[in-house]
Image (cartoon, rainbow, N blue to C red; front, top):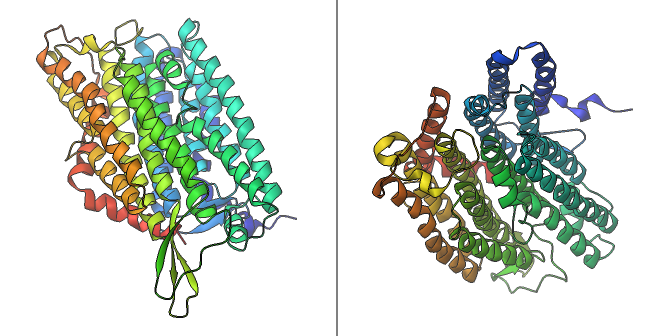
Length: 516
């Protein structure tokens, strides 16, 4: 018989209330006339607000639910806040877009809320089984939303590609979970850490293969090379409002899960015994999975940035940009695989995860900055997009600075932030990630990150040149909801860049609560 105290369902309310609200909203929408879908939007916004308030009220608490399968801590709270903020903005930018394109169907909003709850559960996953269920909860609504503009061929094609490759990656994830369970006899992250520490596994090779398969499954969700092939076509074919939301929420959820896995379960997993250390000596040890993560990061940054140079469609450009930013975030994941072993005065080794704390802090700051920057850039793309919503070329931004200076100024800030220019959130995120990568002894990876950031300046600045220095009609339309969302993203991007100590202090408190 289940113990209600062990279930502790109350701590899951931030994510659970959103999922339940989505189910209720789906039923309520049946009675809402097509011309009054603003009611459904309002109810969805209220649902996000309620979940946001619950998250704030429980932000300092540390507890578990579902017998340790759900972790409620500061890390979960921060992930929830970022996901809910992105969902709120995603709802605002969607309404007028859906009306303009003839897709104003009420099921859009419940699907968005359901996907958001999946991302929140991913950030709170304390067990690999919870992680698997949360990924499907995140992904299945996104498969449907990608094909929301039926019967347009590109939209249906994007949904089919996303679904098939998503199902394929889930197979890798399930197989990886099975191998980890076979090696350790558990799927709970905390128990995995304890058994790895005590070397209580059937075979280190079996565990290593299982971890590799987990990286494949999660690598698809965050679009790292070579698991990125779905991203450009899906981003281009899906409705732009869906692409904006997907580019942020799926990445936040995916990297939250990756960071949980690497910093809670496997930060000290090595093949072989730890080296002997002399008294008062400190040595750096690299986890068995670190090299793989570093290679994925390097390949992702290189391919994403160089292929983005050739793009002429803004959605494909931002798709490859999103791939590149997955590479920068993978740098932090790789850096989390370095830990210190220090010998005390008698030579007894003691493990320190202070470098993993630095990497986690950098990743959290980067995720927050990226979320507001990227969804803001897509929001400007929606304003510029042609009335038939068939796409937006870079040439469509020509003359925007004269015709719509507010939109051009906001897009300029977003492009500078994605490049990593000071006083923007993107610069702060990159600084913390590069700093942690260098401290982890991954100098070559940090150098690749810096050089590819220089390459990215070419295609980001090209958008700015188009808007301010080239002549054109600069046609764009930003209704109040869309303009408000763009203004909010702009303010958030600048706030993170101008007041980095506030964000860094909050992220540090989160990492201290998560890392052992």
